[in-house]
Image 1 (cartoon, helix red, strand yellow):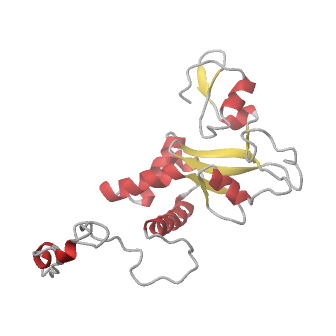
Image 2 (spheres, rainbow, N blue to C red; image 1 turned 30 degrees about the vertical axis):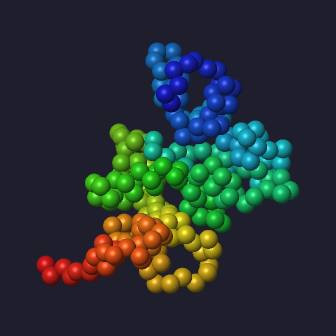
Image 3 (tube, rainbow, N blue to C red; image 1 turned 90 degrees about the vertical axis):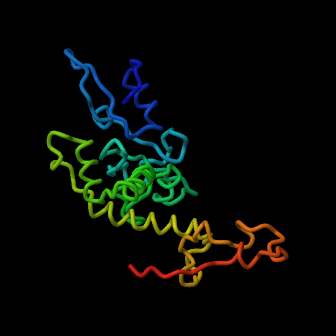
Length: 222
């Protein structure tokens, strides 16, 4: 946690309702030691703006989930909203920009920045999912990274889903169940002339329309 101010246990818990992936430091009598939020009885409350739901203990008690962020892998106890008109648990995570690994048995979630950062590193630096997960393990515990529960299989599964959803968004898909044409999710070439996108409104009346607004298709023979 990069907050420099000294706070009591109660204030630290309240502050981190919006920052559940921080690791605060606690004075142990000799030096400030990094601890987990769970060690100070932190519960991440959902659905009521950081306040505990009055029905939080109905049905089942709050339970732990594995939350993966750019700072590493965290184990956090979640207090779900269990009101009468409560959204599903996975929707409560999505509202907080957490991508759940499952919609039925919620045990792992990823912040959106995990996928956004990996996507850019994968495109620019060719970072593989294996190396990215190894980095997250070492950010969690650089002394014994193998003590961290392996997230590779779960991450690889969810990041493929995340890329598909991003493709739907770019392709203007409103209903993911509706039939789509082949190639409808492919990105168009930004330099190719497209009416209504990068051509003037009167392009059809331009005298040089066949040369200035025509598409040239070539074949790579390498």
